[in-house]
Amino acid sequence: MMLRPYFVAESAAMASIPPGIVENGAECTPRTILSNPGFLKLELMRRGIRVEQDCLDPAAFAPQGSRASTGGLSAHARNMFGNATDVDLILPEGTWVTAPLSNHFTHPSPYLLRRNDSGCWLHWDPPFGQQAEVIPPVCVQVVPPAAFYTRTTSTGLPLARLGTVHGSYLALSPIAQCSFVGTDDQCHFCSLTTKATDELVAVDDILEAIRIVRDTTKIDMVYLSVGHLSGSDGGVRALEPYIRAIKKHFDILVAMDALPPEHNAWIDRTYAMGVDSLSYNLEIFDPWRFDQICPGPSRRIGRQRFLDALEYAATVLPAGAVICHLIVGLESPESTCNGIDALLTRKVMPVLPIFRPFRGRDMRETDEAIELETQQIFDLYGYLYKKVRQHKLPMSWVQNISVVTTPAEGRFFVGAKRPGLLQRLVGGERRPSVMLSDWRRALRVKEVDDSLKSSGL
Ligand code: SF4
View 1 (cartoon, protein in one colour):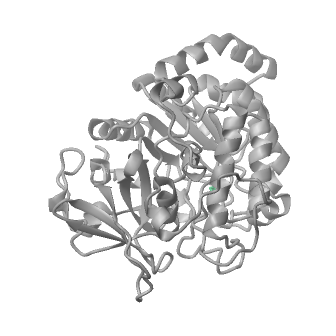
View 2: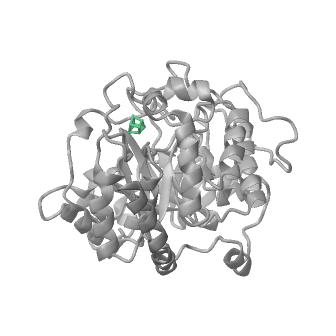
């Protein structure tokens, strides 16, 4: 189940979080949204932005890396997910967001990006004369795309085809394959096409891509994803050469997003080969909707196997490093809350991407996407934050990501302040250390070896 961001349409309520489930739920008005980086990030991911013509003029920005960008708007936008075009911004409090440029999915976005001599400003400026009051704009930083996007490997492979940079991590798909794609088993929100599944990237190309990114952009994690492949290993066997090579050549954390293997011994092996953080993304907690929307994973793997594999993985990997996505907008908020509880009970970190349509894959047209009110969505992230704190699960493994509201950013939805440095250090919110992560793995080697031997892997 590959990482991708999502979008929820703005509409009347169809479902609600049980009363009293969220305390201190903040009211969402245009004024409060613009003054709260968490609210604003979510809104920008959902509704996109409009930009004034000269706003993203490359002459106004120093591009990251050594290569100058050219081409006006396109110089700061890129095809980031499927067929969407996005721009990266940094909001107040260092909050990164990837915002779709207003198009037929987000149109008409009420958020308008303007530039003047003092910088870039995000305005509440609904089109068609809907504005009832003037609200002070918020200053934002436009992030030029990494030089990575304009480069090729020495074998001529454009790096933009290999992956994307999201805040502090690089997402790569060296094996863009999934046996469900192009069949009735394909997940209904998945934008992969059969054409995209034909290629296998050489390990050396992946290493070169990482080298190029690290020369120009500060990243601390490489995120590898793979879809469903034949075999009982969940795809990790195919990723193993990449993982081992990355760990050998770079001082960097490796995260992996795959489908659960049939046997837990593969989870031990996944950790042993160098994976620091692991995602088996159930995507939808409601059993019936999971079966309807994710037919391949439901039939070939089964919902219970997702939960069992996640629970086992949480006993192997560091606390907070086992992650499961639940898409907001593909099930009721109550069901998402039940999923949060079920995952946290298993010591698994829930991450809540917002459903986002792609051209040719718009689940709003088939009534499969549930339309939620802004307040309902805000309350869900507040609920997530409170529950994660309650379970004392470290939030450090999911930080500085521009395409999803992280659990730590859930603080914006309950009026909590960012903990001070000392509190972050003792409260599990400091950045994971590559060295400590490798030490921990080394200490478990004997245990992992014993498990592999006893299972014959
Ligand atoms: S169809 Fe395959 S690649 Fe797409 S979301 Fe489902 S499991 Fe992942």
